[in-house]
Image 1 (cartoon, rainbow, N blue to C red):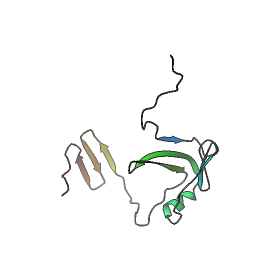
Image 2 (spheres, rainbow, N blue to C red):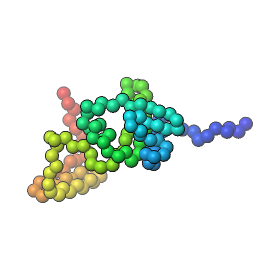
Image 3 (spheres, rainbow, N blue to C red):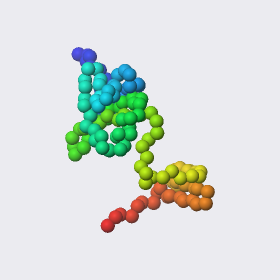
Image 4 (cartoon, helix red, strand yellow):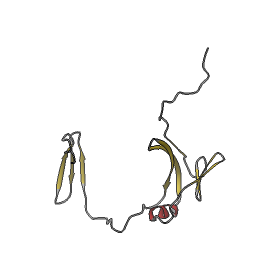
Length: 128
């Protein structure tokens, strides 16, 4: 007997889905995600400056992501927004050029007057 079932997905193989634009498919509309007649209100902390900044930007598209938290599946909406990301006042932007050399064993970083190498094969010391 032949099976008429669709493609088989293993457990946790499909953990995200996203739209191509915010005008069709999965959409962000004010304070909720809308998709094929389904309306899901978001839990938002409007006092959080990162969230407030994001909601004042144009939403390019929406991604729905499933994660496990304390063994329970949770769904999150990620808004991909246009514009500059929020930057806290304590995080300043520096000046100058930095070079990065990601090698298979040693990761190198160099500035104009400094440099550092990280040996990726050396295990970290256990914290006590």
